[in-house]
Image 1 (cartoon, rainbow, N blue to C red):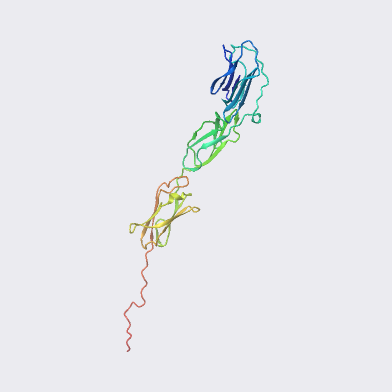
Image 2 (image 1 turned 90 degrees about the vertical axis):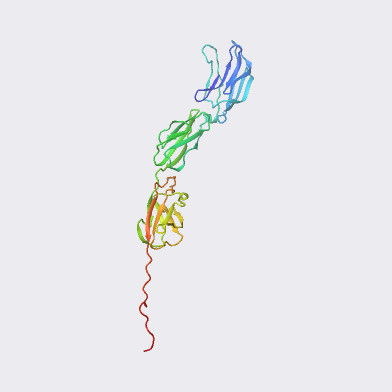
Length: 320
């Protein structure tokens, strides 16, 4: 007698050994002797009882000969059962065989479906056009099929790798197959590829502006949402008239995608300034600004004081 898995691979055998006539049991851990033998040219009533556990991979195996139990194991190594083979392994050993009372019971009377789990892979927004996914099944020895972006499922192994992915959203699905049953609820994952660097779309003041008020703030507006942590110290202002850095504080406004530098004090009148947005700034996917953006402007000159009403010779107040 043989018990096989979904792929037809032997998981358990009960057989009579030539010569000695001993009854032997084989499972995934090796060969095991029973306490009985069966002589040639005699009738024998042999019963094999197998209780499998697909989740643990172990089984209880009992053998009886003419009503007497001759073998029992509670930790036999045995996968989920799919088929039974009864008869000799070779045509060189003819025999008469009668089989009855074969009973197979299990959950719902059908093989257990595997459950698939994705153990690693990209998520959220990433700046890589490649992706790698690892996955497992609740049933050992499962095979897998995978699908990318809604395409047909095809055979795959863990990990599965993809490259050359375009910018935008992507979807991955994988299903395990075991005991002739495919996971009815494949494991899925979604992520977005963004390899496009951000740009500066507007500045304040505009480049080359003149007569800018000394109380102005300096800002850069980006083409997409930015990672606020990357903006620290990325926008600087220099007074080129004195070749000195201008101190100030930075604040990022998410809705407008604008980074603003507010000088600690009013800018000097009649001076020229240079603002620089550095490449440390990144978008949410981690793409850096491709190149630094620089613009200049100058502040208004302080007007001279108005002339005095009494700027002529002093008038005499002596009596005539």
